[in-house]
Length: 182
Image 1 (spheres, helix red, strand yellow):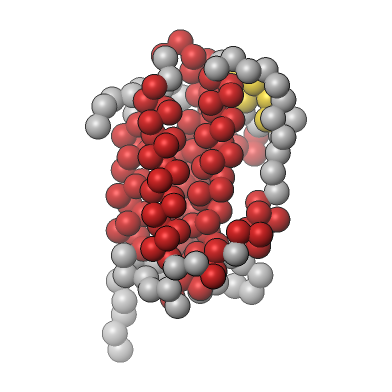
Image 2: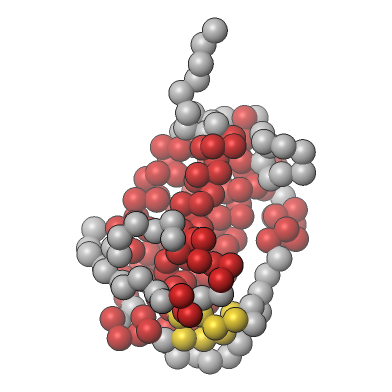
């Protein structure tokens, strides 16, 4: 994997809400982290079958399948924002409501393997985009969801968002945790 060090964004390069994702990112090699998350999702979900992937850690929370579908949806939207902004497009980009997208995606009706494959395909597209962005374009800024954001911040948000949700899958759903036999 090629080295792609992108300096950490300053606090004014993304809305305060997104700082929680940016702080999840360790180091500055974004391409390496994007690629390693592809391997991580496979390992994390390897022992989960379709029935187990319908689990919710609490009433009203997303299922494991819905979390994975949400990751693909968000990756597409943030990747599109990254493309537009790093190309110098100053058109304000709209927000999206993930709580409306998830039910519309009907992810629970799909095989888990197809959701993993979709995430892999979408992430590979993001990785290819990120690797092709000229270094001087990472400082470009635009507007998304009514807030200023830089291309650099979007790359960090992409990695940190997945890191956050992988943590939720581990901590709240017990995904990837050893089974206790009694």
